Length: 98
Image 1 (tube, rainbow, N blue to C red):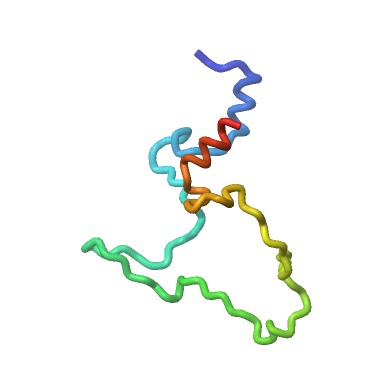
Image 2 (cartoon, rainbow, N blue to C red; image 1 turned 180 degrees about the vertical axis):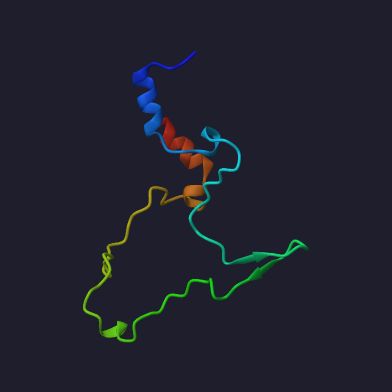
């Protein structure tokens, strides 16, 4: 049995997964390796492959700021009177029943 043409067109647009291909396909996460595995089960770091981020020298006099404010009002929690805070099951059930 073959799918209809309309259904087959939709199937082709989906992301490629390991279940939709033959064996030997490994998608991975795109992070890359930072070393190599040894024959004894260990891992040896290759420091030439490790990513290093260099901070600019004049960062303290830089004019641009991140999109986070330095002045922020105190946020009021929803579980103020409870000593356990948001981890209290009783407070959760009380809110759920309201």
